[in-house]
Image (cartoon, rainbow over all chains, first blue to last red):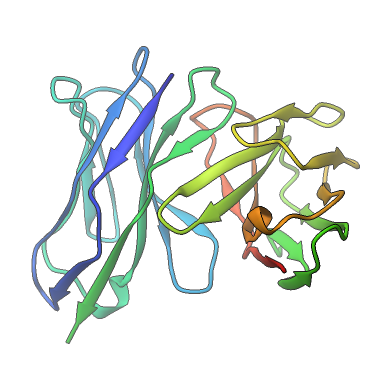
Length: 112
Length: 114
């Protein structure tokens, strides 16, 4: 079945640093890929998505490109802010197309 | 427009007790989901309902039952709680099932089973 693996955290950065959170997937076909973010004490929110190979999803300065060749969907941001501190989840659709499969989450902590 | 609401926010149970977690959405979505979130495990799907009147098992359904009461409400029941069910439970909804439909999450219920 489909699965997703993302880098272990926590990731600790200073404000304005460059961020990369790695995500790779295993899937039958070419499912849509997602990044969700969870701020402290809240539920998950969709950050960005890409629905086909070579698509780039972007939102709030975050970007991720759907790479079919490397089966990856790495999350990047050029200059992080303290307000970006959260847990980030990579996800893809399950094989049946009925729900999402989430990675284990990567905690990002940004200090000023 | 409240989105997805869950009650209660916190709950402590003793082993063997039962309880129902409530979830409601006001976005006229067809599909609803229950996940559990455990440290280092990400979110795992317990049950989902693709449309009103249907429910299906997810990855970790054992020990749980669900009811899609109507289009708005999707409840999760623990008949005999066990310490292994200590977790944070999230309800989510989407317009329809499938990857083109963003899932919207509630704030979660933190459950502790002693």
